Image 1: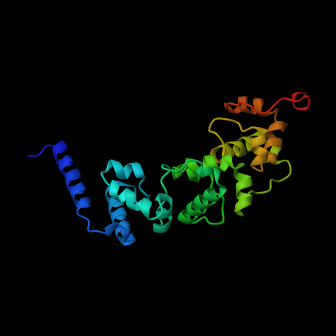
Image 2: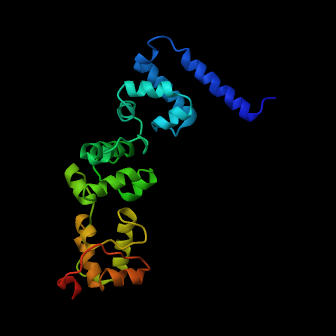
Image 3: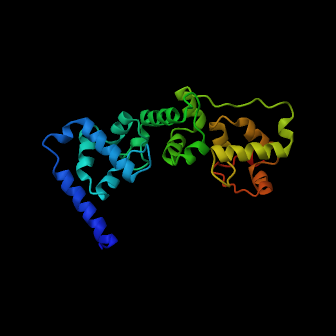
Length: 233
């Protein structure tokens, strides 16, 4: 009986030999590239997710990797086949281009049936798309990106006196942190303003300021804002 290690080695050898036996011009036909990719995904990857270059190389499928590059690259092929891009293998400076962020957000929304809504932090984290989340922050935050893309962020007007109740502030603040902020940390006033939540910032000030609110809720607060005579008084 073959050992598991030897059996795996023979499978890799057979796979390499199979790749070498492809007829001349095989990889010029995109239909062959698609078929090989979908077969690879079925065997090695999460369904619906484009494999990365490193995953193909590790599986001894460098020829398939070269074919993907030949037909436009990993990002372009993923879009063409309706596959979700992996978080890896983004070229340098990829997220600095707002057009790439827009494409990723719209693809994410299309895959989740939320075309008209700005994706939340919770949704992005659940889908393991921290890359999109970080890019949104780099491009000015949720409110600015949503406005530029014409996406909705449903905010309900609060009734008079709503913010006088600290329990309501607690609920709203924790919900904001869960969706858009950093776990366990009270957002700064600047972050709230950028996110279009000046109402929440005002409520925090009403209840003693971010330091006091953080203390009452057992949260951290590390302000990155300068203290001025106005804020320090």
